[in-house]
Amino acid sequence: MLTDSKFAHHRTAAKRFLLMVVFLNLGFARPSLALDEVNLHISAGISGNALLYKFTIEKGFYREEGLDVRPIQAGMLPGIQGLVGGSFHFSQILGQGAGAILRGVPLKIVMVFDTRPLNWLFARKEIRSLQELKGGKQIAVSSFGAALDQMTRDLLPKRGIDPQKDVVLRAIEPTPARLAALMSGAVDAAVVNQMDRIIAKKNGFTELLFYGDDLEFVTAGAVTTEKLLAQRPDLVQHFLRGTLKGFHWLKTNEKEVVGRMLPIMKVSESEATDVYKAWLRVMSVDGTIPRSLQEKMITFQRKSLKVERDVAPENVYDLSIVRSLNEELRKNK
Image 1 (spheres, rainbow, N blue to C red):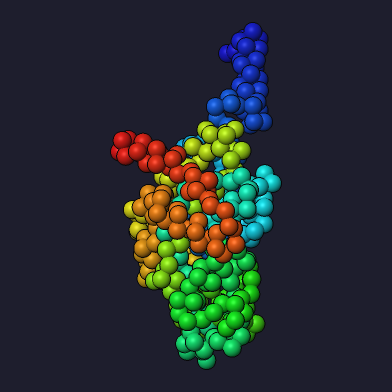
Image 2 (cartoon, helix red, strand yellow):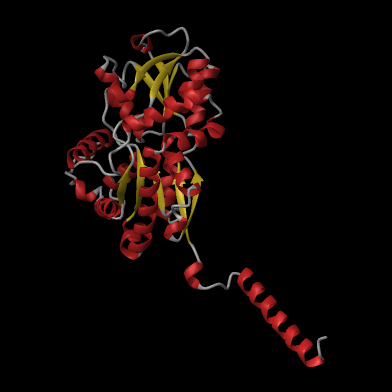
């Protein structure tokens, strides 16, 4: 039997325990348990590069780094504007990011996912060849100055089409809107990603080009502000380490990745496997690219944006952190 004094003691202990639970639930836990919030700009629609970030979050690689990464879909240009304005800490979009840097905006590309574009040009069913686009046919691309727009302007002349005279390029975003424009007849052709390629093929549209056959091009990865690099190098390092873990995991775990793709893409297992294998064809080796490709990208974008001054790769890319992290991960295997 409990005496009054023992009962009072137990009641006091219970109150202390409840107060501790409330204290923790209200968010007053130790600072070491708190996660840094990171706003990440990703492209709209479904793409391998956006899914890489999604799966990295789901696998818990960012939480291991003390980060709560929140992916936010937005158009390419608004996303870069948000990055510059402080709404985002990082952006996936490297084409618009590099374009902003060439115009003097203080950003840096700190990781690169791909070296070739996973994009296709599809046309209306009655158009059977690329040459049939001549005569002012309308082609839906991304926002002007973005990666898809730049690639299209570079690729078409290689196939005998002048993008200034023979066709009309239309800026249509986000990605699913380009396919919708093609299917509705609002445009004659559209540049699509892998997911939209599956839909376009099933609906009988004509595949005219695979961009990766002709072009080396960087489209996605991580770009951030020079301010964040200077003021929060720890945050940048944790974000890139988490991203790099996800990057290497995605490249080496086909069965699990394909399994995660199925409910998102709503395609067959064979179609998802084909998409996954296409990703592997264009992904960079370790999240970096050689200086030669950096220079090639800068030259291409300077020409596209009519930037006359010389721009050194160091002014656009800073892949030193990812290189260091790769070495760290290799040693810890």
